[in-house]
Image (cartoon, rainbow, N blue to C red):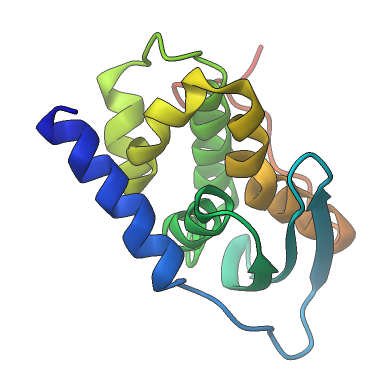
Amino acid sequence: MNDLDQLYQQVILDHSRERHGAGALDAPDGQSHQVNPTCGDEVTLDVKVQDGTIAAVGWQGEGCSISQASISVMHDLVDGADLETVARLEADFDALMHSRGKGVDEAVLDALEDGAAFEGVSKYPNRVKCALLGWMALKDALARSGVVLPQVEADGAPAS
C-alpha cells in the first residue's frame, strides 16, 4: 500500500470514529431515513435550511466505516454551504464514486477535501452504495423540506 492509500485509509478510519455532525437536530426542516439493504448501513439525517444555505445537518447512523465516515465528511463539506455548492459537491462525489477507480479531475478531488479519501472505494461497486448513503439521505431530506438542489455537472458547471 502506498503512502497516499494509507493516508486515505486513515482519513476514513478517523471520520468513522469521530463522527462529525452526529446527533439529531431539534425541529429540522427535513428528515430522511435511508438503509442500504446490501450491508445493513442506516442513517437518519436531519437538515435545516435558511436563506438558500444549509444552516445545520445532524445525523444518527450505524454501519460500516465507509458509510459512517462518508456521512461525517459530507457533513463537513455541506454544513453552512449554499445550495449551489452543495449540488456541485454532490455531483462531484457521485462522479468520484462512479469512476470505477479510473480517477477524476484533480479539481474535483480538491473540492471534495477529505472526500477524496473515498477514491479507492469506487473500485468496489458493492461499497459505492455505502459511501453514497448519506448523500442520498441529504438530497431526500432537502426535498422533504421543499428544497430541490440545482442541477450541475460534476465540474461545477450548470447542467445543460
